[in-house]
Length: 108
Image (tube, rainbow, N blue to C red):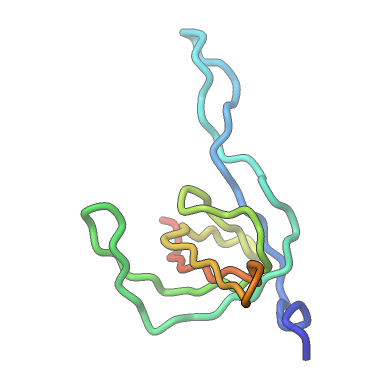
């Protein structure tokens, strides 16, 4: 069984982008789709404490994906639910990056 065959869901990675200009002529920041319909796999986690800045938060979900462009400043949408990215871990074999594990929580 190959790794891509385990990625049974699709997700959209969103990133901040400049939007319309406000009344002062400054661009507003808005979430824009960065990667659309990326193969992924979502798993509920037992809750892992992750340090984000000076704050400790609990990650309730783990996302598996191929080696894609995703950072801790992004968010992920799966089946209409939005998740906040807390930590991105890059896994590699002996020479190249293989896949990413992304720790997340529901965005409120």
